[in-house]
Image 1 (cartoon, rainbow, N blue to C red):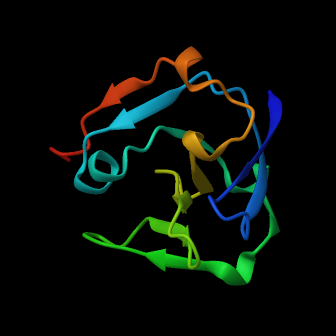
Image 2 (cartoon, rainbow, N blue to C red):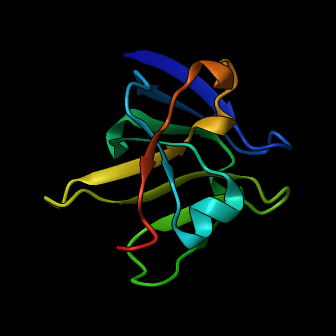
Image 3 (cartoon, rainbow, N blue to C red):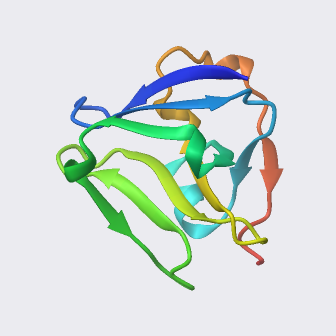
Length: 116
């Protein structure tokens, strides 16, 4: 596990998350495909918003179970919030928003969210 810092494009929203990035997925559902997400899922307690909580807006669709969070200023989608199947709070981190991650080193696993 490593501590990663992340932010939106304009810097109004900053966060840190503890994860090892061993299980990053690339989903083909309607929103992930269009936004180009690479996602790492962590318990919500491992995500800390450092700055800009009030600058975050929320988008939900379909079953409205995942709260897709994005910066109101620049529109950058930083993470989502929801629950694990067992009910535990979780966060879906947009790995593309992590500042020190070399994206070419990540091999995301495909996930078929389109047919769920």
